[in-house]
Length: 279
Length: 342
Ligand SMILES: Cc1cc2nc3c(=O)[nH]c(=O)nc-3n(C[C@H](O)[C@H](O)[C@H](O)COP(=O)(O)OP(=O)(O)OC[C@H]3O[C@@H](n4cnc5c(N)ncnc54)[C@H](O)[C@@H]3O)c2cc1C
Ligand code: SF4
Ligand code: SF4
Ligand code: FES
Image (cartoon, rainbow over all chains, first blue to last red):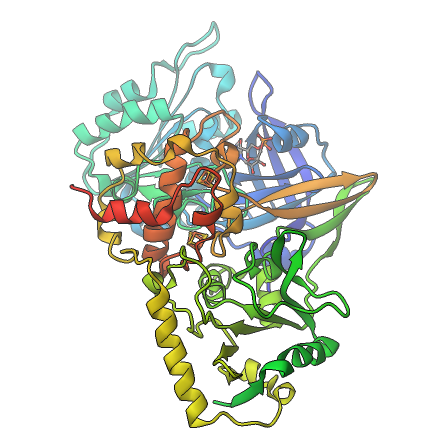
C-alpha cells in the first residue's frame, strides 16, 4: 500500500528572492530518487505539501511546469511556522514533498480555446506554471490566443521578473503587466487589475479565463469578465482553505460536500455556485 | 453461515482463549467509566454493560498516533521510519451501532484513490465480535433511524446475541469464521434462532427515539442560509466532547514534535467544533463563529456524507446526546430541520 503521508525526499537546489520586501521566495527542489520524480506526475494547477520534519507541512501550489523536467518549484510567502522555517533554509538542504495533490487547471477543456490568464500579487504561481506549460514548444499549438494580465501593488512586488521580461518579447502571447503605483524607474502600466482587464477587453469568444489573486481583486475583476460576455462555466479560479492531509481525510478543507484538497483547488465559478459560500 | 450456541457461563472462557492468540479489545470498567480498551493479561471483559463511553473506532483510528519518525542530520532533518505496525486483533463486545461506524469510516479511509494506510492496516487485521443490544441500553439510542438496529450485524464479523438462557453466535464473514473453533461444537437450533428473532423484535420495539435522519437531506440541500442555524449554537461551549465521543467523526490534525535530534509526526483527533480548526495563517476563518461550526457538523453528517457516500454519518449511538454538557440534542435538531418552512 502506497503511503500518501510520507513525503518524497528532495534537495533545495536553488532559492530566488522574488520581491524587494524579501518575504516571497521561490524554491527549486530536485528529487533525491529518480523513481520519485517519475511518480510525481503533475499538471499545472496542482499543489503539494511541503514537508519540513520537525516543523510541519504547508500546502503550496506548484509553480513550475512538467514541461521543464528535473525539478519542481514553489513560490512561498513567509507567513507562519513552516513557511518561516522554509525561508531560513539554504541551498543544499534536504526536505520533503508530498503530492502532487488536487485537480489541475482544466487542461483538456482549455485545449483549442483562447486563454485569458489573470493574476494578482504572489497568487500568480500556478498561473505561471500554466503559462509555461502552454508556451512549451510542443504544446503551444494546442491552445489559441493567450492573453495574460498580471498585476502587483508595486514594481518591487512583481514576481518572476526575468520571466515576465522574456515573455514580453514573445509574439505568441499578449502580456500586460501592471502595478497599482509605479516608481521612478517603472515604465509599464499603472492601474488596478480590474481596470486593466476592462481596457484590454479580451474577447469572450471561444475563450476561458483562469484567475488567481487576492479576494478583493477577484471580487472587482469578475464583473468585468461578466460584462465582456464570459459565462460562469468559462471562468476558473483556485481556492485556498486550511489543510492538513491534502487527500480528503482530515475533514477540514471542505466547501459543502467537496474537499478543496481533493476535488479542488480549481473550480469554475459555475461549480462554486453549486457549493456553499463558505471559504 | 456457521452458527453456534454458547452457554452463558462459557463466553468469558472463550474470550480468554481468544486472548491467548489475539490482542483483544473489549469493554472494561475503569474507575467510573466503561471504556473500550485493550485487555491486560488476565483482565476480564464486561458482558453486561450499556455501551462504552469511548467509541471503539479508536482501535483503528487512535486519539493520537505516530505516523513518521525522523532524525536531524547536518544536511537537514530526514525520514527515519514509518510507524505502520498492526497486530492481529479481536474487538469483543462492540455494540451494533459502533460496528456499523466501521463501515462508514471505511468509506472515507479506504477509498480507491487514497487509502489511509494507518487505518486500513489496523482494520484489516481486526475481527469484530459484536454483542447485540438485548435489551437496548439507553433511551437516547436511535440506531433504527439511521439504518441500523440493536441486533444488526452490519460491520460485524461475528454477532453474539443473548437469547436468555444462552448466546446465539453467528459467524457473518470469512474473517469471523476463523474464530468458530473457539466457540465449541453446539450448533444453533431452530428454536434458538426463533428466540433471537423474538429478542430482536423486542429490542427494536424498545427504541423510542425515532428521527427523520434520511428525510432531512433534501431540506438541508436548500437550507444553508436558513435562519434556523442561528438557534442551535448559542450555548455550545466548543468543548468537542460530541465529536471526540462520536464513532463516526474522523477529523484529525497532523503535528510535529522534536526532542533533541529525534522527532515524530503525529496525528491527533481534531474537531470541527474548535474555532482554530479552519483558521488560516492570515487570520481569515471561513467558519468564524460556532454557528458555522454547528452547521458544518449537521451538514457533514446528514448531507455531505450522503452526497459523497450515500450514507448518513451517524449511527444513532446517543453519545453526543448524553454527554454534551449543555444538553444540545442532535435528535431534536434533525427533528426541527424536518419541519423547516422554506
Ligand atoms: C491549495 C493551496 C495552495 C497554496 N499555495 C500557496 C503558494 O503558492 N504560496 C504561498 O505562499 N502560500 C500558498 N498557500 C497558503 C499556505 O499554505 C499557507 O500560507 C501556509 O500553510 C501557512 O503555513 P505556516 O506553517 O507558515 O503557518 P502557520 O500559521 O504556522 O500554520 C499552521 C498550519 O495551518 C495550515 N494553514 C494555515 N493557513 C493555511 C492556508 N491559508 N492554506 C492552507 N493551509 C493553511 C497549514 O497546515 C500550516 O502548517 C496555499 C494554500 C493552499 C490551500
Ligand atoms: S452524531 Fe451523536 S448519536 Fe450520531 S453517531 Fe455521533 S455521537 Fe452517536
Ligand atoms: S458536546 Fe455540546 S457543548 Fe461540547 S462542543 Fe459538542 S455541542 Fe458544543
Ligand atoms: S486537507 Fe484534509 S481533508 Fe482536505
